[in-house]
View 1 (cartoon, each protein chain N blue to C red):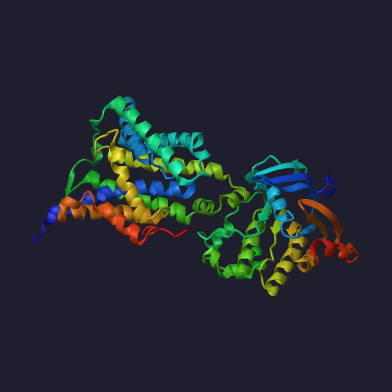
View 2 (view 1 turned 90 degrees about the vertical axis):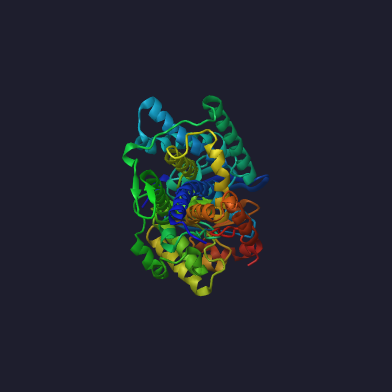
Length: 238
Length: 291
C-alpha cells in the first residue's frame, strides 16, 4: 500500500481539455486518495468521460495538472501515463474483435509488479475461463465488461479508471460488478469511477464529485449522502 | 487436346516462382496497410532497392548472396524507417489517397535516381554456387535456385503469418490496427510499433528483391514492372488480410502460369480480368473483411 502522508494518490488541478475547437473541461479539480473508491457523477455531457480521458492523455489538448504519486503526468503521452501505474477501462469497453478472449486478457503489458494472476482474475470472473478461445466480441455484454476490467487487473496498476462499467447491463451482472469493485477495494486498489447509475454508485463509493459544464460543482462523502439528496436531485435529476 | 506435361509443369513452376514474389510483396503491402493505413506505392521501388543492395554488397563489400539475404532487408528496411519518420507519420489522419500519392512520388524519385546512375539495361547477379544446378524430377527439370525461392518465400510468408496471428507481438499489432488509442493507453508505444512495422514491410520487399536478383537482372524498373500486378493481387485477395495475401499471391502466380500454357495470349491480362470480376462480385476481395 502507498503511504498516504504523501498526499492524494491522484491529484487533478484546474484541468482543461479540448476536442478540436470545443472546450470541454473548464478547470476541473479533484483528488483521489489511495485505497478509495471515488465516483464522478453528472449528467450526460458534463465532462466525466473527458476527465478520465484527460488523465490518461487521450484527448487532443489538455492543460492544468494531473499528478499521480506526486509525479506530473500532464505532458506525457498516454503510454507513459499507463506505465506510471494507471489503468483505464473505457465506456465502450474496447474489446478487440481480432483477438480471442485470452489474447484480450493478456494484451495490456505489466507496468508494475504485483498485478493479479490469471487464476485470481478467473476467481473474480469465472465465466472468462470457460471462453478463453472465443472471439472477444462474441462474449455477452456482461462478459465483455468483465474481460475489460479483468485485463487491467493483471498489469500491476494500482489506480483503476472505470468509465460506466454498468452501462447497458442486466441487474444481476451489475450486482456482480459491484461485488468485484468492493473486492478490489479490499485488495488495495484505488478506483475512480464514472457512473450515471447513482443507485449502483452508492453501493461502492467512499466519496462523490458532481460535475457540470466541465467543472466540479460539489463533493461529499458517502456518510453525507442523506443530507445531500436534495443537491443530487438538483444536479442529476434523480 | 494433347497435354505436353514437361511444358505444363515448366509453366506451373514459373507460375510458382512469380507467385512467390507476388506473395512476399503483397504480404508486405498488407502488413503496412493494416497498421499504417498507407497504400505503399513505393513497395516496388523498395523491392528494386533490395536487389540493388545485394548487388552493391557483392560489388563493393564482397558480401555474397547469403549475407545480402540478411543485410539488404535490414538496410532497405532502415531506409523505410527514415521515410516513415520523415514523411508518412504526418499522413495517418488524412485520406488514403495522400499516402498513395506520397509513396507514388517517392517511387518515381527513387526509380529515376537509380536509372540516372545505372541505366536501364540491368546488372547481372549470379546464382549462389550452392544453388546452381538442376534436379531431374522425371516429368520436368527443376533448377535448384528456383526451388529454393519457392520454399524460402513460403517459409517467410508462413513465419510472418504465424507471428501476426499467433504471438503476443502479433496481438499488439492486431489490436493496434483496431484501436491504436486504447492500445497506447495500456502502455504500449504504438508510434514506435508503427515505425517498426513499416520497416518490416519494406524489409520483406527488399528480401524479395534479393531473391529476384539472380532470376531477373538487377534493374531500376524491375519494381515498377511487378508492382502493378502485385496491387491487382492485393485487390483480389482483399486489403489487410495476411493469409489472403499469401494464398492469393501464390494462387495467382499459378493461374498466370497455367494461362501461359493453355492460352498464352491472355497470360499478361488474366490477373487483371480476375481483378475486375472480383471487384464486381466481391468488392472487399476474396479474403477481405467488410469494414
